[in-house]
Length: 253
Image 1 (cartoon, helix red, strand yellow):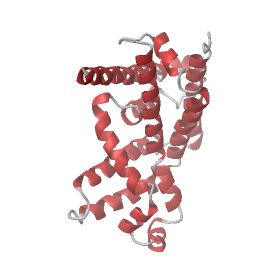
Image 2: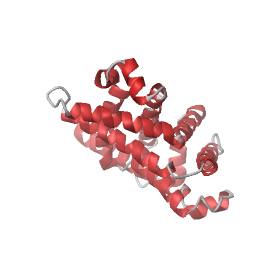
Image 3: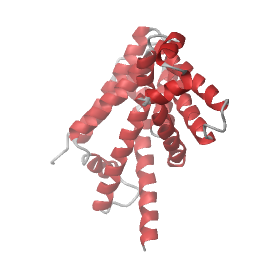
Image 4: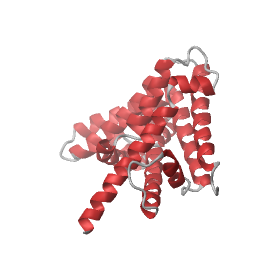
């Protein structure tokens, strides 16, 4: 019986992930954003598509991609969030700053922004799952049922999550900084590959996947001017806040 219950929860969790992915896809359709906001000509359908794909591929991936991304972020966290481990690969602090410049500390902080956002999203998914089970909702959940479960996440917590999403995209608009972070991780991977007996293949693959997450973000913004970058990040923030307000506006009714 315990095994059957576990399978049911796993299936339900996968459904909730896909449900949220569907809502993201809906709210990042170009036609919808055109109605809700005044978009500049440069903020075109291709740009919206790139932003939507980043959400769906890197922040809220499909259930079958979760384990791989979990492992990657766990590895990336152990290296990027602990400077001692990074300097062990790059050399001492003075040598690393000489090689990569004074942006190194900020670059490492930017490197874990996507990690923090992904982890926070997972925490919310756990709350959604418990709320769905407690209400005995069965898939497929309606939008109303899903919103009811989302409201079990404290309003303030969800607002803080939106702030993290905004910070993530805003940090990627600093393409100089993102490029520096990418260079650092490339150097880390090269050093690890040169010592296969010291650094497990899984660690290398994890950091490589984290590197790809940053490269995808860098690719979105690298050729844009500052005005378009600001328009995109502001629109993402406003769009997410509108979703939050639409969900919690019915709270207690």
